[in-house]
Image (cartoon, rainbow, N blue to C red; front, side, top):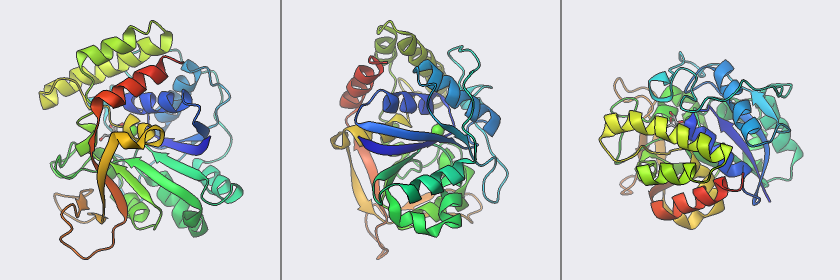
Length: 310
Ligand code: BDR
Ligand code: CA
């Protein structure tokens, strides 16, 4: 199985991504590292454990990471995810403990201990933990297989500001470090995730599984959907983060371009914008596989089948 570490700020869509990974025998989740993002760190660490317990994985190592972006104040998204970050399904507070130590140390130690090129990082939130690890231990960059991340946008532009997507906007300095790290990057921007829409039928398919996990996923995607229906006027809300894990399982669901992507860190109105050279109009070196499209039917078929296994 492919070894992965999930870096996350759950988040309903983070929750679905984590469940998809835990349900998939092709993936060996070495640990879950939490970061501040959708909600502050005490809630993302709580929510990650709630999700593990729901999946029956009280053995999972869940680490607390960075409490705030590298240089900026934390921006959160309770307006999307609710006060808990995981509104929509009521689950008990977790009993499983946090793993001892800091998420950044876990990332560094694991990458140094494992065979070079054998560990994939799957990033579902602001990139603060990854950037801190790359800064503190530059030797690990060459040991990462690839970073598959949800973040950024090109044609779809922004969701937290007119120019920027949330994960990149919250910590543009961290994103810049990751995008300049030389590590192979696969990016799932809003261009892709705004095609992974949780329509009524897709939410009901989760509920129809008749399992506690199916009900939880239906509750979360339903909560998310009501919010985004109002915002985008589309049928269903984008289920962002699971696109990363689905890519690891079935890459042919996605298509994109290997291009140069720079992170705007200074713009007055555009901080956190992913300046993606989609039309290859610069001579800058490609640094990311920037996805542009997905097979939404195939994606939801995979997701529903895997969720049914839990
Ligand atoms: C991203 O921001 C968060 O709100 C979601 O969990 C996702 O990772 C989408 O912009
Ligand atoms: Ca997220």
